[in-house]
Image 1 (cartoon, rainbow, N blue to C red):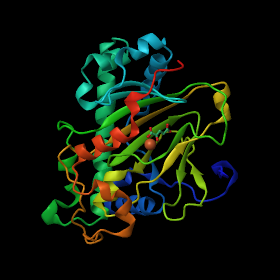
Image 2 (image 1 turned 60 degrees about the vertical axis):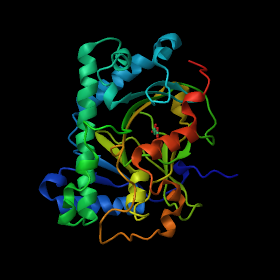
Image 3 (image 1 turned 45 degrees about the vertical axis):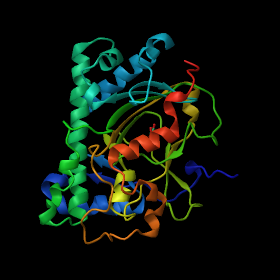
Length: 325
Ligand SMILES: O=C(O)CCC(=O)C(=O)O
Ligand SMILES: [Fe+2]
């Protein structure tokens, strides 16, 4: 099979949206977000409001954690709650859940340092706040009627204090030699509403430009300093009956990894557990199942928790053997 490398092709690129527009001109901000979401399903946000020094600090904490011995890292091994350390073939990760922010597992991640643990909590809440604002952009763009809370439509299903599958994931791709045609993380969609992603120094993420035309090239998502990458995930595809696409993406080997590790941080935002995934009230969305939504038919009539459990069971993340470092 021929794998098209994003690096060799001049094709579409992932747009950058200036999120300071959200305060000054929310309608225009929503328009740009919707346009990016319908085309490619990924967009960068600049002026996103999450302090850069906090993001830098989280990357430092992540490096310190992953540089520890295997024995230390596996003290909180991932389980069915999708929390703790998970080693995979070319990728390691540490998951923090909202409810675990004051737990042993988080203080362990930052080596018992209470101040740093609080920083992880502050960072997590900042990301969550940003996500709620991005979801408001979607509600504006989708013209949710005032009778259904208008721009605040998604607020009630994204409440920090409520139980949800939301997960903050620190990712580490160790220094290694690899095959540029074999993904380090295979192509997949994310399971929640949206994902906020921060990359550092070494690129590798690629995005499928079109779900309809499978043979279009993959688009590289370069590291753009001071931005956060947003992608549409499965809930939004189901809520919009396929109008918005939960975009396939993967992580490819970057030759820089011969000498350096790659780090990224993903915040998977999920709706509260009891939220249904049926089409939302919007004049742009048909209530009947559309062809584009059929691939997610299995998620219909599930709530957010049932859907996450269903996807996690299929991915068997916590049944993998511990290998490597
Ligand atoms: O590491 C990355 O850049 C992306 C990771 C990712 O897509 C995921 O963990 O779902
Ligand atoms: Fe992903």
